[in-house]
Image (cartoon, rainbow, N blue to C red; front, side, top):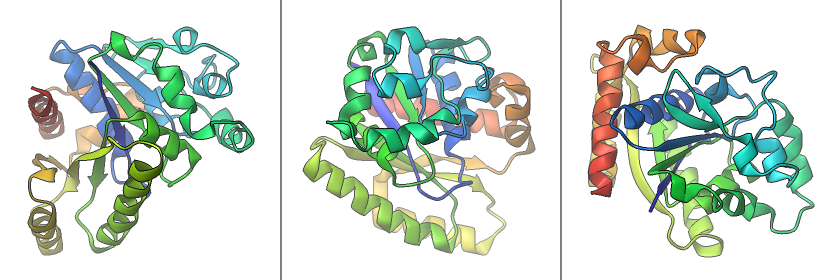
Length: 254
């Protein structure tokens, strides 16, 4: 049975897409069958996986609107070793079109049901908003991974996200859980970073991943080359951290 993880945080710039790409590649390196779903109209998970978001078709936009089957939209990331359901700017308009469709919150779940048994892990890269697209991800997912920076405003946003997850659990997906909180762009030299990290551990306990993703230049450089950092520079601190994260995620499933 596949594990479906929505990687979400309504705050932008916290490392959601970077985490989605590198966790997918790290799980693939460990021999797991992985599907990465790009649910962000920016399409960064698509380009970061080595695909041309401007020319790829069909995409998740056509899948959500019922214009294409999910099987025909799947692409292979030769750089990452996993499958991709790509996205591009058309998805922004698709969200508006979804509003008038019956069962709009479950479109992704229904499409995914056709292929999810082919994978050990399905990772959904959510947009930086608590939108209808994110609701689709939460309705389809078994759990949510929350990447976040250890800064003051991150804690405020986290409260809103946790409340949204609770509402989705009540109305649409009673099995939805928080898989874990992932500390990203971590700089231990910063006293506020350490304080927020300690607060997270005090409040969420074992829901905070032991793995911490450090600030790392190679992680920032890899997307411009269309490669996960675990392929771009496998010995970098960022790559090693994502490999550790994959082991931790697999440990949760064992």
